[in-house]
Length: 82
Image (tube, rainbow, N blue to C red; front, side, top):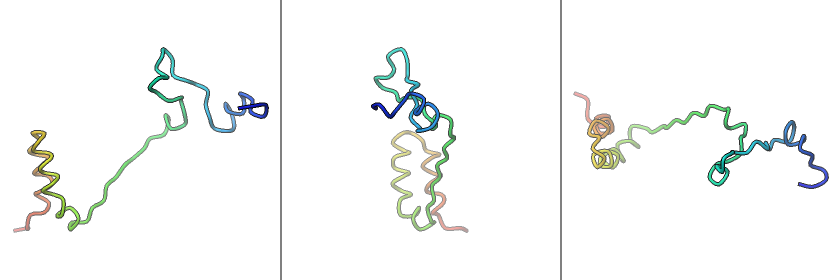
């Protein structure tokens, strides 16, 4: 904003982008940014002991959604090996 912030500064150098959502979608959507072109990856790490503490809770939620295989996928990893 202001005298020292020309449009080109935001377009090419400073980071903000003026490309805004159209057709009224600016009410619920953000301007186009570098994040729109970056692939993000998420990962989760639990030790065997940490999973054992929560496996039944995970299974409970999965069963409530009717996803019995999801429930088993959590619980089976905490069962003793034969």
